[in-house]
Image 1 (spheres, helix red, strand yellow):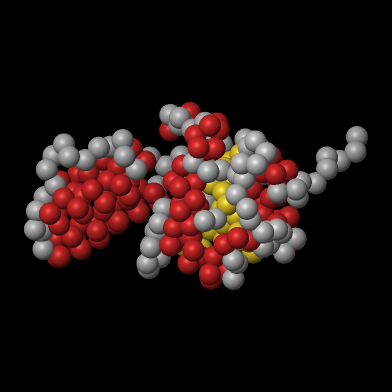
Image 2 (cartoon, helix red, strand yellow):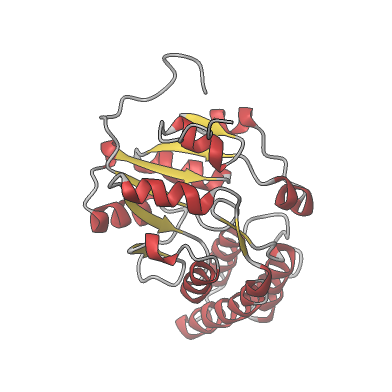
Length: 249
């Protein structure tokens, strides 16, 4: 937990909790490097100068940079629309390749079950496509817990825009000062902070962190505004004071 006095002022008790999906609740081992490379390839096909985009940047920032360069170069709207459609179709297909190996993160079913039983409103805000998110929830048997979901396929703002989180909370009927966003990435923390919603970080699962060469640390989450940090979902349950005691020997 962060030092005393470092947490923003929020109302208690919590009414609703919004979760990130991939890495937070499910483990999919997406090939993000391939996705980023494919977006760059398509951007250059539509007119972005080779070498202007970096595979080190998150996909949404690559797309934003590509859009800006194409607009500044005077590309007609039709070119922008075709680029949008093509890169979305391409990364959707790569994303779906991960579905057969997608599993629930340890502790996810138990955490969501107890939150549901205690009456929390639960939502999902993800950068994944709608089809992947829905199928991943079904595959991991987490779908019954989510009546509220916004993905990158949803019309309107998408994560990390704070408006995406605020729209989801409005659908859930949860005031921002009674809400919590839980995620495993700095983009999640930035989204929550910009929306004025408290944020709890879950450290990346060791298996995914190693594969993705993750450099996430507790200090980076604290600097991004996290009110609490858990190493895993069972520890998150303790932060939420909903953990059940271990059975007696």
